[in-house]
Amino acid sequence: MARFDWPGLMRAGLTGLRLRPSEFWALTPAELLLMLGHGSGTAPMGRARLDELARAFPDSEREV
Image 1 (cartoon, one colour):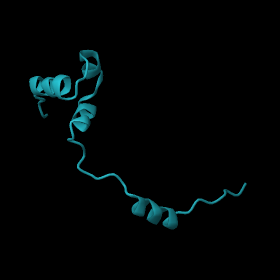
Image 2 (cartoon, helix red, strand yellow):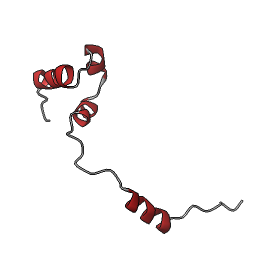
Image 3 (cartoon, rainbow, N blue to C red):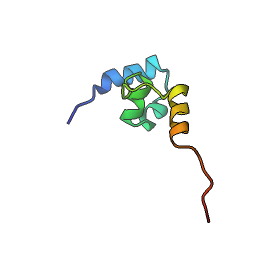
């Protein structure tokens, strides 16, 4: 299991992100890492990809 650098994360959260201690401790480690720019590494879906998916899977009314 990976260990977290709590002193470094606290310094980044409290001084870099200017979080209050209660805000810092309310975050999950994943949320904190995401806020610090260490997300999944996957770029958000762009409009072109959304349009492509909408064409491939159009909304349709369900037959009752």
